[in-house]
Image (cartoon, rainbow, N blue to C red):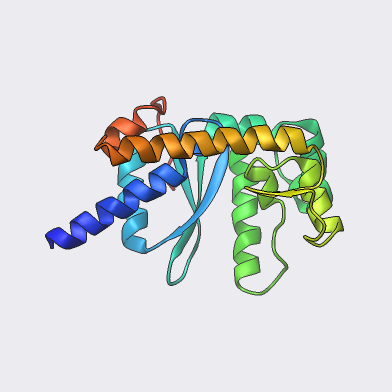
Length: 200
């Protein structure tokens, strides 16, 4: 039993470190796939904090969005990004542009994709913080011929992307360094401002 608990703790520590850019507010959103046990442990861990979890699909594993509400709202309010969202899926225009409505619709589209009823919802890239021009470029070139590959495939501004990639790398490395020196998970999460959290 102790070994299982230690193993779960280690997995949670790894997931938190890998998602440091979301926790610290550098990145608006991430997508994670974990076991049901890990999902419920993460739900408890983030309860009452600035991070929200939105389950998208449950099969052998739970796939969910992991996001900071204020950062994701800010991301999705960008006019160019909003236009790209409607271009990718005009059905988003049928809903109020609130974050909860956009997320509900994305979850429906992701579920339809998992059931084989539609293609992959590429607007996911917009939720994850990818620039609209890079999402557009990825679709136009079918994932080939990127100028740079990192946290996403870059078709537009390489310098801007490199700055973001470097900031993400620094946050991940910093979290792993702190975790490696025995900093408890709760203390790592204290780097994330508290607020009422919505864990769906």
